[in-house]
Image 1 (cartoon, rainbow, N blue to C red):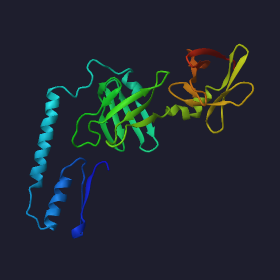
Image 2 (image 1 turned 180 degrees about the horizontal axis):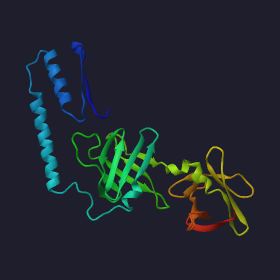
Image 3 (image 1 turned 90 degrees about the vertical axis):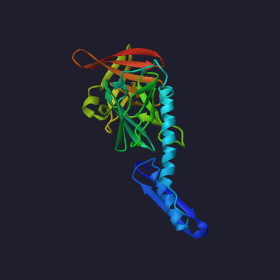
Image 4 (image 1 turned 180 degrees about the vertical axis):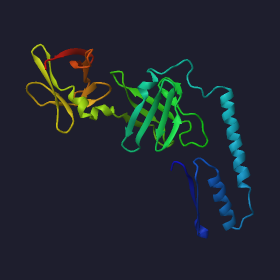
Length: 265
């Protein structure tokens, strides 16, 4: 549990059970209390568990410093992120872990999760890592951002638990895609020759695209004014504004090729 370290020990033959908890993660104090309580309940001579476990801590600290001296934990040198830092900012969701927020811009990124936050400096390539912090549950947490074919950052992988694989988070759409006033500006008929694409705003707030006949397809917001066509893998629609801010063109991308449609009304 974030923010706590717990242990539960049993001596079945003596009908003994000891539960200990401390309000900081990764703390040896939990085990010091557990072992000391066991010693007393079993009538054993006292042991300096604090000194013994602190000695192990100091040895681990020395090993970390040796790695730093040899520059074994600096990532791949000479690499940089694929995007401007502001492109990584947003909300990312996992069905079990909930929402992670990445904030910031040119000055640096920040990771927020379940009320915890930490700086998120670049490590190498598309991997970012929080700084070491003995008092933080997010200490040295690695995040790898994932982009799609359109060149958008659309997800991230993060190491939240040592016993499981990195969790995959999906980027949530921009909040403007739920704004009826914004979506209403995109509604209209766009033409390519004699072909028509009707952009309609449904009563439930979803935008759809369809021709003169057939069932329309729902548009799923991505970034900016770009939408993914639901159930049409690789198909996206981007609305293009003129100098006056009116959306009078539509770019339809289909697996690498692009067509531009002109707004008729």
